[in-house]
Amino acid sequence: MTKDEVIARLKEGNKRYLTATANDGDVSDAIRKDTMENGQHPYAVVVACSDSRVVPEDIFMTGIGELFTIRVAGNVITDTQLGSIEYACGHLGCLVVVILGHTNCGAVGAALSGDGEDHVKSLTDYIHLAIGNEKDYDKACCLNAEAGAKIVKDALGKGDDAPLTVAAMYDIKTGEVRWL
Image 1 (cartoon, rainbow, N blue to C red):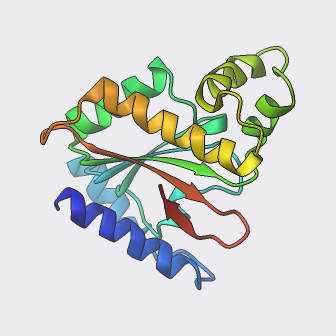
Image 2: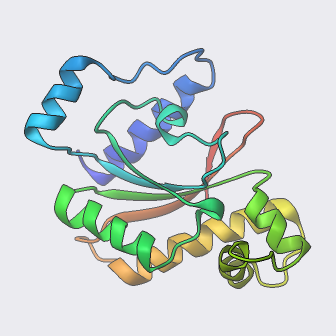
C-alpha cells in the first residue's frame, strides 16, 4: 500500500464504524496463526489516548495485525512513544503515523484545570507545552494532537522516505474522525 492508500483505508474504516454495531475486522484463528508464524505487518501506527472510549482498532474497523497501536493518557509523545513509533516504521514497515486526539480528553482537561498531581503531572507538563495558553477545551485537544504530530515529524523526518505523520481528532459522541 502507498501512504495515500493507508489514509484512504483508515477513512473508509471510520466511515463503516459510524453505522456499525460490531467490528468487522479479522480476528479469526487463521489471522492469529498467520501473524504468529509470519510476523506482524501493520500498515499504520496510531498513537491514541488510553481513554476506554477510544479504541483505534474499532474506530478504524481493523483486525489483528493491521495497526500498531500505542496508547497513553493524553496521547502525549515522549521518548518512549517515539521509540515505539521508530520500531513500527523501521522494523515493521508502517507507512503512516496517526496521532489520534479525542474530544473531552481527561488528560487535556487536567492540564486546563491545573498541573495535575503526582505522576499525572508528567502528562500534563507535556500537554501544557502543546496547548500553551489555550483555554478552549476543544481547541486544546486539537493543539495537543497537532503538537504530537509535529514532535514525530521532527524526530522521523519529513522526506519521501519518512512516514506520513498526521493528527486527527476522534469525536467520542459521534464516532467520527476529523483529520487535522
